[in-house]
Length: 76
Image 1 (cartoon, one colour):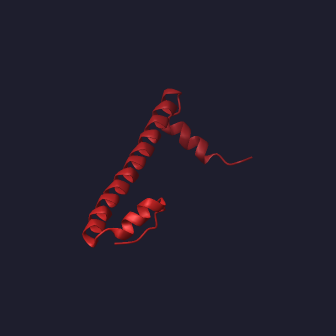
Image 2 (image 1 turned 120 degrees about the vertical axis):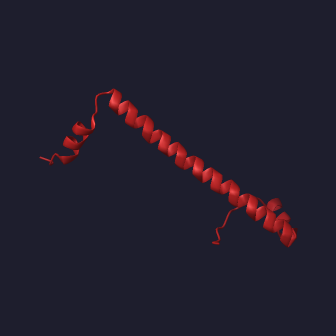
């Protein structure tokens, strides 16, 4: 397990300090799942973005062959 620092408002910090060890453990698990889910969604959204860009490029006539040609051209 690794640690990260998350900034919260004063009321949340006070509540955390007054929580029991059991409550803190439950909150840690919930926060871990929440952050993990949020990060996975961002990755999926990025993958969806790349897929959409790829499809749009293909619709506009950019083939893998043309892309490779462009990438392999030397600057003049």
